[in-house]
Every structure is written in C-alpha cells, then in structure tokens.
Length: 253
Image (cartoon, rainbow, N blue to C red):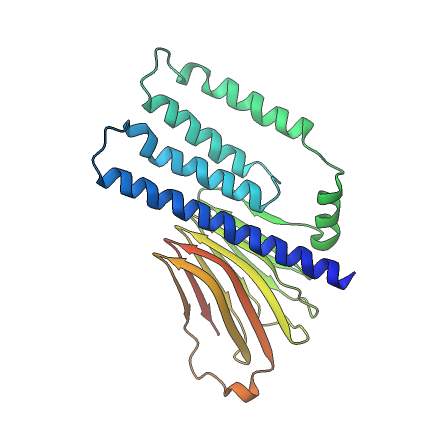
C-alpha cells in the first residue's frame, strides 16, 4: 500500500511538472510569434487566452474540484469572443450561458468517484479561496493541507504533529502558511505553484529546505537568518512545483 501511495505521489508530481512545462512552452511560443510580427489575429495572443490556460492548469491539478477553474475559463472565453469581433454581441448571452454551465457542472459533476473518494480520505477538507480581497485566517489541523488562493489571500497555520505535506497554489494572489508548530518524522514534500502570485512558508530554523521548483521569471528564496548547522537540521522539507512570474519565500519568526 505504501508503494502504491508513493507511486501515486510521483505520478502526480510528474504530471504537474509536465503540465507546467506545457504551459511555459505555450507562453514561449506566443512570445516568439508576437515578436515575429506575423499576421496573427490579436485575440489569439490575448491575456484572456492566458486565463483559459490557467483555468485548465488549475482544473487538471485539482482534479476539477470546485468551480474556480471553470470561472477562469468562462471569463477568458468571454473576453476572447468579445475580442474576435463576431457578428453577435456575446455580452447579451454571457451571464445566462455562464450560469447554465456552472449550474450544470455542480449538478452533474462526479461526487462519489474513486478518485474523489481517495482524495477525501487523504485530505478530509480543502481550504479554497476565490475572493478579490479576502484574507482567510484559519487553523488547519489536517495532516495534509490543500490551499488555493486566486485573486485573493489565504493565511493558515498547520498544527499537525504527523504532517504529510500537501498542495499550495497561489494564482494572482498570496498564501501564507505557518508551519512552526507542525512536525513530521524526517522528510515531507509540498507541491507549490505560484503564478503571478506569492507563497510564504514560515518554518522552524531546524528544517532543511530542498527545492525542486522550476522557476521561470520567478524565484525561490530562503530568507531565514542564523541558519543552524546542517548536522543539527533534523527535518527536511522538499518543495516541488513551479514559480511562474511569482515567488516562493521561506522565513522563520
């Protein structure tokens, strides 16, 4: 069973890296095409299509839980249609079509599938933010955290003494995770994604940080002062994920 869970985690990380790489490649191709001054319609290289990409990215990474990814896709699709100068005005139908799609998704989405069931057992309850100016401060007693901050902020404190890592995503927003009271045997992994946003991890001084994060126009910085000798660092926090035009910051109180 442990080997199966380990393989599932590796598959999730690999798929996340592949998806991040695909989005980075698409952005690179768009920049190249834009600089080549080809006769390409402006709506193809618009910011609204970038929103659609982010929506797909979030949906795949989150196994299409919640509706944030769907809202991003709908907003992006509406603006793309509006920029295409079609013969009809999409604003007349946007609200109705959007509500029908979101309502249909909430009604017909799978609720008891094996995938969702397994994630519920592992994660119990996910914290999810999709608000423009909200700072949610809550304590997370779960062993696995699942945090998403989109166009907003989330601040959480982890108290688990059997911490097993989790997933943190900040898209055009910020997430502050306080882990000074968390504990785990030796090594734990966090999957972190910062896209035009920032993630701040506040950890104890005796945690070693190993970063496998892919940073493109972004950064991963360990800003802790008075770091302990390596021989005295008894815990290792491994960071996997992507920083795309965003930053991941590690600090201590």
